[in-house]
Image (cartoon, rainbow, N blue to C red):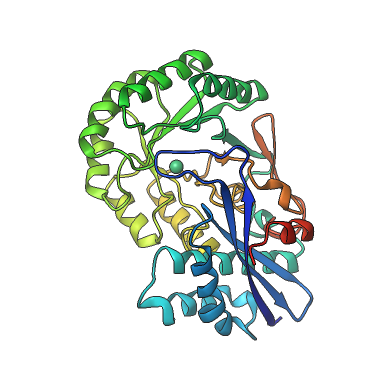
Amino acid sequence: MKITKVESFILHVPLNPPITDAINAPTHWGVTGVRIFTDEGITGYGYTGTTAFGDKMITDTIDLYYAPELMGKDPFMVKDIWDKLRFGKMHWIGRAGITHMALAAVDIALWDIMSKAAEKPLWQYLGGHKSKGIKAYNTNGGWLNWSKDRLLKDITSYVEEGFTGVKMKVGNSNSREDYDRVKAVRKEIGDDILLMIDVNQMWNINTAMTWGKKLEEFDLYWLEEPLNPDDILNHKKLADELNIPIALGEHVYTKYAFRDYIHQGAVEYVQVDVTRVGGITEWLQVAGLAASYDLPIVPHVGDMGQVHQHLVASTQNSPMLEYIPWIRHIFEEPVIVEGGYYKLPELPGASTTIIDKYFEKYRVK
Ligand code: MG
């Protein structure tokens, strides 16, 4: 099989209503990536996730530097291709962020092609581990711009739908407000539902120590991204001092950075995101690394779950997956969660094929 054409794309899918966390206020979700065509008629789709900023820098990387390297190559040589792109012309200015997200999109498209050629959904192609579905937790009721009433109403409705885990955003400028909202949610949902909180990096070590300790009383399942993601040392301090496990990974770009977090005991739930590390190839390496430390992988869904459901379903140390249903309508086989569980995909590939109608509708020219 040979690659015959490489075509980048940017889609902006509107969020109704727009949401906020402590650092982001997106009005659209950016689905930015690549279609890779082959001489056997199989087309691979791969994408990364953005807050609808910086997309053109990602597609420029694909068009100008990765596409020429891909032409004529055999998609089944994915690891060879990965090494060539990673250590190619963009190495001098890249290695994380834009160039690595572009690499993720390409890598996902190649795995989509391989599993389509094998006529298996990716999770089976990867040696599926969970055949009965994946436990989901819901993030979509806990946004920072939700009033307290809406927060309680939405989170309760997800629990009633069957979700046994929910996440809410914190990181208000007034931490007392965070405390009151978490207290209200815990009271509303009772003790049996997993409750996670996400700071989105807004705290410093002192705030995290002070308010983390106060929040321990609410039996939180994890504390997500409390600090700057480059600050391994202070995450380690929190992991040692707080009785709430530390979760992070959505801004950690490489297996080397994960190694340092994991080896130093600075992370307890590894949220490696396939759209941030260099795609499926590197995601699997991080999952293996975490397995050797007996740490659970609970990915951040920059892809909104389409690819991650396959990865979680085929990874032994991955017990649960986030659910945010923002872009599911654009896919040929969208993620389906029923009764708090992801139903596993049946079509061949990585569930990344986008319906033509939406491909045109949301495309940024
Ligand atoms: Mg997060």
